[in-house]
Length: 62
Image (cartoon, rainbow, N blue to C red; front, side, top):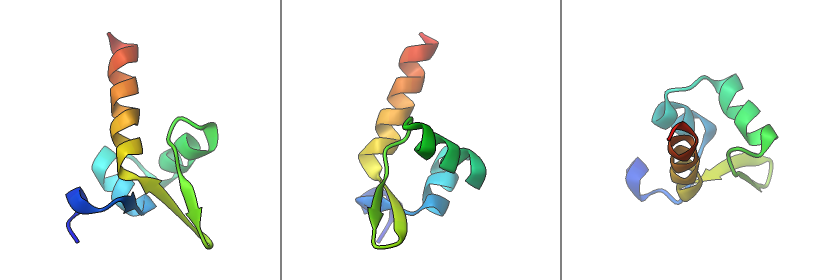
């Protein structure tokens, strides 16, 4: 499934999409800046949460 169609992204997919490191992505999740969910033992980020995070960055920069 292409990344654009995925509803839940893995941390490595989020890392690639945002061009951030693993620790930074987990820091964003821990701080609540980036929404995530647990599926069993796995951590997943809803695709729209990535868009919301980017939108929030744009609003803060304006």
